[in-house]
Image (cartoon, rainbow, N blue to C red; front, side):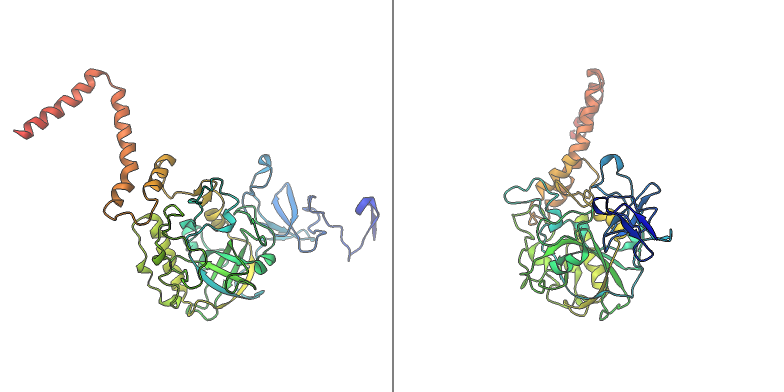
Length: 394
């Protein structure tokens, strides 16, 4: 038995096997491996620091002071000096069940609302990023728990309350409960592929007045799976948003049929964004839900690092809105967004409009090259061209 003066206001604190010397939230817990606050664990950042937190996402935490913004390992430190990866493993040992649905209304995700700076009237940049469509973990570094899909969704306040505070990576809540950037591992025991699991991250809020969201509920974001009858905020194809990649009719082509029977080929694939949305639709369909409101097994898990990197702030959505999939300059990307601001652009014009920034960039390079040459050099380049043209006209 040890008497230690570390209690509140300097009061003596009795340390016994049943009352361990554990760390406060602001203290380094690496040498103790336990935390005073119930529900917190000691998570390692690196060999120099560990702290008590309710959860931990491996990688950079953007709320850390800039000079200390280095990756967290999120290894859980135990009182016996051991540690583990901090995750809950694969399927089994489920926390319980939750009701689930699906949607794709093209509207911005609630966790992105605090990131966007230029709202405008109407808020044309507040829309869903195509990077939020269901994705195959194998394409982004591999699964962490054997899961077959990574998805984002809208969590009810009841479910969000169990997820805990917002993560540092993926936005923040502006209303309702927190939990942005937190993940669940889920399984649909009635699906065609009932052995499949998926990791779903909270990226939006399902308000209590939405159907089913007055209890623990997750609404999965899946292109083509909005439900025209129940959707309360569909802006697909609307002039209230810039290019939403899908029309309103396309956004709910599978909303009223069993997901396993969806015809995702009804979605367009003419642009990289549209192809990403269509691929997400097909991946979700392959899971094989028999109906759109199943009860899922679930438990909280640490979000896979590859998933976080895919949907973190700045990767899919930043203060200017959806992050472009294109590699060329931001000016050219902005031009493309401007000319494709509506989804009803004529199909015959779209190839030209999409290529226009490339023509501008190439043309600018030619002009810059000519400006660096002397007048005789330019004449020697141009005159043969004129002569050849005249010869062709004879």
